[in-house]
Image 1 (cartoon, rainbow, N blue to C red):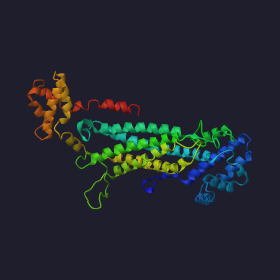
Image 2 (image 1 turned 30 degrees about the horizontal axis):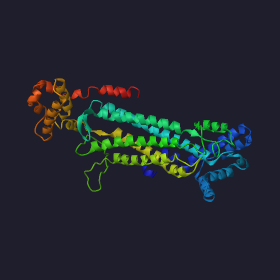
Image 3 (image 1 turned 180 degrees about the vertical axis):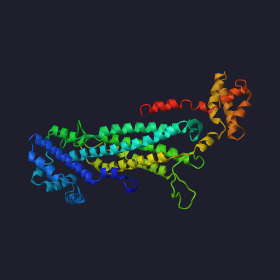
Image 4 (image 1 turned 135 degrees about the vertical axis):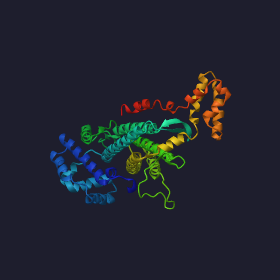
Amino acid sequence: MIPRYSRPEMTAIWEPANRFRIWFEIEAHACDALANFDVIPKEAAKAVWEKGDLPYTPERIARIDEIEAETRHDVIAFLTELSEQVGEEARFVHQGMTSSDVLDTCLSVQMTQAADLLLKGLDKLLVALKTRANEFKHTACMGRSHGIHAEPTTFGLKLLGHYAEFVRCRQRLKNARTEIATCAISGPVGTFANIDPSVEAHVAGKLGLAIEPVSTQIIPRDRHAAFFAALGIVASAIERLATEIRHLQRTEVREAEEYFSPGQKGSSSMPHKRNPVLTENLCGLARLVRSTVTPALENVVLWHERDISHSSVERVIAPDATVGLDFAISRLAGVIEKLVVYEDALRQNLEKLGGLHNSQRVLLALTQKGMSREDAYRLVQRNAMEVWKGNGAFLNLLKGEKEIADYLANDELEVLFDLGYHTKHVETIFSRVLEDN
């Protein structure tokens, strides 16, 4: 991921220094387990820690890269450089293991580290959404379907719906983190032919991972696919909220708006512009994150016990998806925290069509008074269409309709235009969502 859309803590997970550090810990913990079973000398395991447990400085990383340029094998290059540090005892490192034991277990650690940061970011976003939802809990606004006025809701309910969605996203990501947190130290085809299963269990425990019940040469990629699918769903949730804000910021609507900071410029040519650049950016980042889901699904299918067609894909999508999503979550939290809501515009747009949003209530009242649904729909729609044409106020037109007057008196019609009717269950909905959150 380019620096523009990266945050240092997430980027650091995918840097060579962290990767090589995890590789070292896998190998060193495996040596400890092997020494406990007298497969290798205890002095050798001790030497690996004492001589090899050094920071992976730029110089060490450059040396590994230099070796890999010759060997064309990253794990062998790593082990060769480690042996230069450890000395003679290094011959006991990597006993009975294969490269994927290191690579896949390391990837599991990195993905769990990334998931922890993403969960932390979602927690911050949830706080922002919950705070703003409560702030506008009873602030009435127009609900829209197909982009057209439907019936009233509240701005708080709008935000609450997104809050509930991100609660679900968080649970999916938490589940995906659990599923990906597995360790495989089982040898070339997963049979433990040259290494005891207890070594795998020891390494897994030290790294905070579960053991992979059945590995081949690799950890099965359905786990990874589930992880990236969870990231993709979070990205879609981000885009849905970002798209809502973009629509509400349109000049003709302007019910809500991204914070426009002092000194900010909206256009190189038009000084008046206040564009929704942050939420537009979020929509683009969401597409990028979602684009990693299909390759992750395709990685599930590999030849026999393993091929490496998945490897190049994961080297790209794992950093890009997690770094990009981390940035997007943080940006969205900031947008929500500073979101400007224009309550006057909410009210004006709510009243713009003169009460047409009460059409269903009038329809139902007529049917309850004995009119057939077909006749009630025809009469209400006929008068509603006149309002669309600008030929009068809805309530006045209904009062002048003789067929309606036979069923509903004027005062009964007026009661049907009470805004509070539409928002009377707001507290119930809030309690459903927030009572456990």
